[in-house]
Length: 277
Image (tube, rainbow, N blue to C red; front, side, top):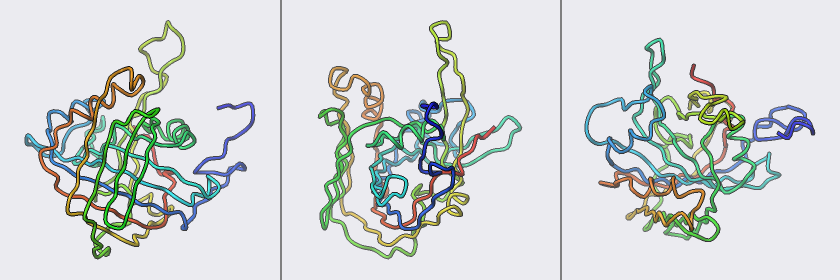
């Protein structure tokens, strides 16, 4: 929408409907992986089809922020996104077969265009916030805010360059099948309250994404210190995001088990995203 003006151009097609992949688009992803509570995270699963693959009381997740640049569909511009990624998740289909992946319950983005496209075309759980990056020779800082109300500080310090050969050229990060998300589109009308026009889960396979536009890692940096902190504020400061940020602030971080910055070229357009069943 709006449909009155014809097909909308986006990351997966130009105004004539032709694909427009580019190897020259750039990404820089900073991530902090941590050990946390399995019980807490499983409350974020949207249906009973989602569960953790391995038993135990702990689980692993990452907060990850990415800067995309030289994006063809944005006229050479770019934007930032910041999400929560829950690792070691298994989706069980109705026929009993399974998909192992990383579940993404939330993705903040700093630009309207990819939010609209990602929600409408791909079923991605995207919402807006301002994402400000402060990058220096040995440090990386990200501040997330809404209308001037800052609710997250993400910091990597003591950065040192390491051998990039061991890093996979995927922005997703984990060596599993793909990214799992859940789509929900509410029906229109007061009499339809609580009902959905569409509700189903989606997977983005890493291998298929890399065939569309292969990503090449150019540089990897590891920090000596890494931290991520949330301030849930209140409903006046975050009237449309407090219900999200208050949950993120409550996620226990038992231990940071890994952190890094991965920089490279080649940004997949997520055209391999598909409904699971």
